[in-house]
Length: 238
Image 1 (cartoon, rainbow, N blue to C red):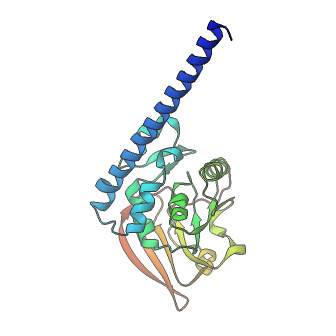
Image 2: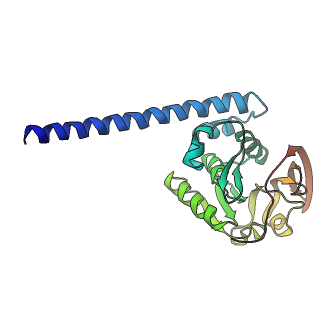
Image 3: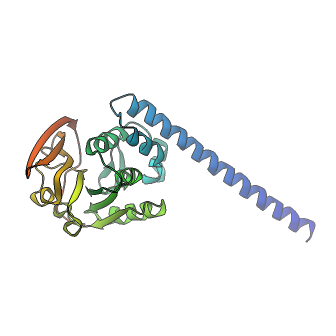
């Protein structure tokens, strides 16, 4: 090998090493930001479920948003994900997860896949997640991201969320990540007796109340938690 060839090969190896080192350092930065998010935004408030905190510390939230927003991925606010939709602020994701109380191997139905981040958190906690998204581009993107990150216990379907996922019912819990003035009857039928539905309940045009509906003797029992603002549930597939 000539001196020039050896020099070029050496430059290639050094360049590759520095690129890998830079990528590693960036991931370390994200890991630090993620832990700070857990400590300052979640544990310092009312998120007390250790399993939720561990899941939020593990899931790489920055990979569920576009490159332009990754520097804000762990900030205490929602972010746009395209098609007029958003990824909820970390606290709301953690709170809804804590209210749902998912256990390992339970079947959870998610209405509104969005970026796929909420589904990843549930999967990180050991749940089997069946997620329905009405916007095809979001369903495809979220499915690809979840698969790339190895969340094999999540299945994503492009469909009207109000229909649920009848073939997989009953579910141990349902999480609805879009505003609705009532629980669609078909969804209520798909949750098991004693199961929970966590959702923003109220008029989509204004603020809603984050609520927990528990199925007891076939009837809904509602607990209201706090005021929230979510994008509306829609029945128009696109």
